[in-house]
Length: 382
Image (tube, rainbow, N blue to C red; front, side):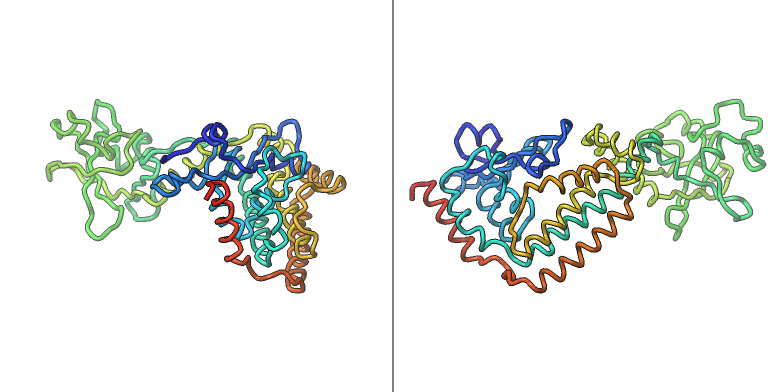
């Protein structure tokens, strides 16, 4: 067995624990909220002994994710917040609970450590980054971010060496330099009537020539021009032409800028595909230039981190007063600066609380190994 699907887990009875998590578990869900399911499974012995180990199974949207028992315990040992929350899911959110899970639940008090300071705090910091980053993507959308081509990053240096002009503007707008070359030319002036030659010791700089007289070159468009294909090319091209072709000047290709644009465009396309339209609209409506859901998670994670240090354990379902506040944050009722001030206070409190608490530094690895062996032996009948 080299692959597993959620359907396989369900039909083969491999799931030993699952629960509805996310906003439903926290009590902050709204009618538009996604249903997030997390769970644990034990893979069949044959595939464990063979080459088919699968440590995690998820659906295409990652709304449903199951962890193989070994992977689950590895994450538990690091005090991963999502895993600790799963173990403390509210009773009304639990979908499946095999008796074998009692082995884990009986040891739950021994599984919390001072690592929570960094895992819960680290996750909270990631939420702040995401909250601020969404505004950038919203601006991309409003500006209808379009895919640019190599030519958009090419420039012709001015004859006096002072500044440059985008090659597209240079081609489309007559100037003293260009008029000398194609003032009497009757054909279409486009990037195909130019050729490039490499300039030694000058990165991404090229000599650009007027090759309109090179009929054999012009008639083979794949080998003529600044680029081979304006829409699909990922680099400029060098062209073979005679030494009699007029030299125009220097073309500079901002290759790094083009590469950065391609990465940002790909990121934007992924965001368009995966975004929650309701969430995007909600953030636009409140106009606070941050993602309310991310900041809601940030404050919750920091609060939970403090509670762990204070000996209160993992409280997944938040109290009514906090739920009301978290929903207000989600809707953008708070200024970003106010939330950052609160986050700083909570982080300082976390530092003080973990410094004073008596939690162990880390989870006992022998305990984790014993839990894993006990569960496998029981499930496999060994």
